[in-house]
Every structure is written in C-alpha cells, then in structure tokens.
Length: 171
Image (cartoon, rainbow, N blue to C red; front, side, top):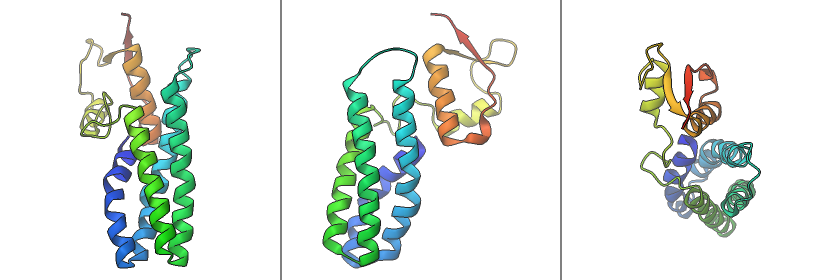
C-alpha cells in the first residue's frame, strides 16, 4: 500500500501548488503519484473481494466506488492542469481527497505505514532476506489470511519479488 499512502501524504500539498500556479508540480502529482496509486487501489479491492468466499461486503463497494472516483477525478485534474484552470483543478482535487480518505477508511488502511496489518517495507525486506518467523526450513510461517495479504502486497507493490517461501499454518 505504499503508493496509496504516498498519494495520501502528497495530496495535501497540491492545493498550494494550484494556488501558486505551479502547474508543473501539479502535473507531477497527477502523472506520477496519483496515477501510480490507481492500479493498487483497484487491485487491492478486487483481491479482497476475490478470496474464494462468496461474501458481499458493503465496504468493498465503497472502496471500489472511491477508487473509480479517484481515477476519474485524476483525469479531470490532469485536464484542468493542462488548461491552467484553478477552479476546475481545485474541484477535482477535492473529490480525489474525499475518495482517497473514504478508500483508506473503509479499507482500514490508516496505519502509520499506510496499512492496517499489512507488512511494512522493512518487514517485506526481512521476508526477502529470510527474516521473520521460521519453521526450521527457512520458511516464513503465517496464517492463511496473512499469506494472502503478503502475496497480494508483493504482487501489487513489488512484482520482482513474487518468489516467497511461505508455509500456511492451519488455525
């Protein structure tokens, strides 16, 4: 969730950039930070809904709608920045901010590292280097749900590290 956290951290600086007419900085936010957060938002929501359980959960719908709203308003912000339209840019950014806050609140992704119980970058680095709780065969021992979240996190955030030694413990 680092990309979503980064967008959440940086979105508060954009109103000042719009007010100052610093359209280059606004474009960097649109094309780099916000655009980089859209796919992880959609993938994470999709992964939560596709856990093999036939559950209909209201917060997933809210998260999906928030991700779509964020994406659509990012496109509006890009157009407004291109036209240097302060009013349209501020309106689009406001909608993006509400959508991002809704997404993170509904997904319980409000932890200091941008997640709830999702491993931080340091934990992921420890996993890659063989750190963590081991079972004697150099495997990281986790529950089924923890394994699922770890695997999804690796696939969304760091595609080069899809090789994991994970042993799923039965509960």
